[in-house]
Image 1 (cartoon, one colour):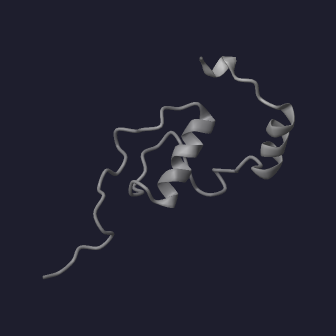
Image 2 (cartoon, rainbow, N blue to C red):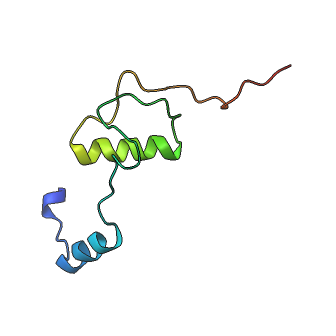
Length: 76
C-alpha cells in the first residue's frame, strides 16, 4: 500500500489548515535558503527546517551547525 492509496477525509484537511495557519518565516527572521547556526533539535532549527520544507528546498544545508554540545563551554 502506498500513500496514494490512503483515503483522506476532506474535513480533516480543512480542520488542519484552520488550526495551523501559514507561518510568516521571514517575519521570524528565518531565511530558508541560508545556513543556520541553530543547534540540532532547537526550536530555531525546527522552524528553519519547516521553512525549507514550505519553500520546497532541501532540509539540510552544508553550512548548518552540527554541534550537539551545550551552548556555552564548561570551564574546569
